Figure (cartoon, rainbow, N blue to C red):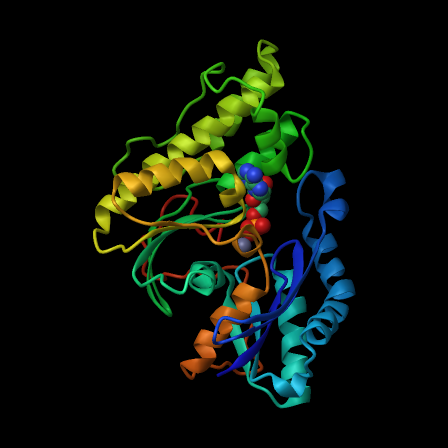
Length: 344
Ligand code: KG4
Ligand code: ZN
């Protein structure tokens, strides 16, 4: 059995975790940075990187202390090596390299997207390859067929904004605060989802790609018209996102009859309208719907330790000169789409 220290710092969460290959999570520590970025209405890369530097060493110590372990007890040190905000990625990766060197342990450089893609296996031992993963967060919006460790087929990506980014921008337009997703969801609870006519970008198009930039512009026009209540715009926006996520995921499912389950991960999976619409879609197709617990859906280090452990157990470790990467597609063979790659 292997025990892995995982480190995550690719966006605005600093995290450290200890996870064993039998799925035991011995510790997971996380520090968010909402209050630092809140005044700017979005993540500021330099502020994020500096915050990681300040918090990470104490978080790693805290994780080891919670587990009652020392560095000598771990088998390998895994860190996110990309994709993400490269200043932040460097902070976590350099810390991991330093610890690996000092403790004489191997380094495992983990693709953050692989962390998300494999995290459902940490919470659901029965989940079997291949499964269709809808990864929807502030930085990512992709449909991936997860075929095995290191084997991912990207069926779709966003041609402009990620879904979580659309929530964040809409919240900013509506003056609802940051992070936007939970704020929009709260506001939408009191609103009428049919009140504001909004587009469903790419609905029905044959390729299952996503687009949210046009929707965001329509929200801006609705806001500026002065004709609609904030909660009605929030509810109508949320419904438009749900409709396009469901339509695109349905399209992808048609292409992968071999999928054993529909799985969702990423911060937008916290949205209860999104969850219930996807539950209905999966059950209509006779598939189990799997959503890891929320803390595991959003950025965290347990998913990095878990993916790192699977790689370590497969004999995959990395040299100490492994670079931090702003971009690192999971499926390098995936066809390029307009604007894709910008969001990882
Ligand atoms: O996975 P995550 O923590 O970080 C990355 O972006 O990788 O996802 C954060 C994103 C943000 O855009 C946030 O607005 C969105 O997830 N989000 C939500 C909700 N909670 C978080 N979006 C819609 N509804 C929510 N309840
Ligand atoms: Zn993420």
